[in-house]
Length: 80
Image 1: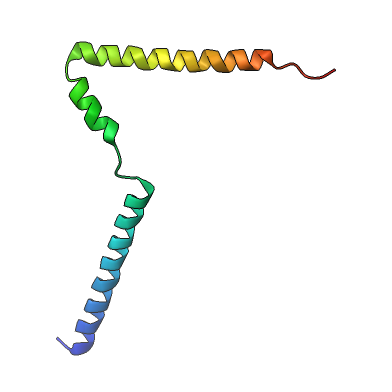
Image 2 (image 1 turned 30 degrees about the horizontal axis):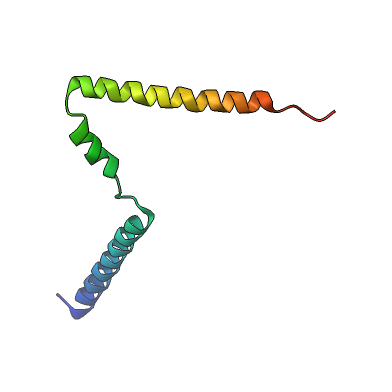
């Protein structure tokens, strides 16, 4: 191989490595790899009954938040 081809290959591989490093650092900085709840929930809810309870708890949480929003909207009255 000629030295020109080797220089191009080194340049391209260095660029791709730097691009991969930048993407990794960006992912770490923005929290793309932070999924602690997945691991904690996997340990907590490893049976069928626990999973059903977890789903019910999530539904309750959503209903409570929905009811709060509905109450807040009902309290608002436009000025006369």
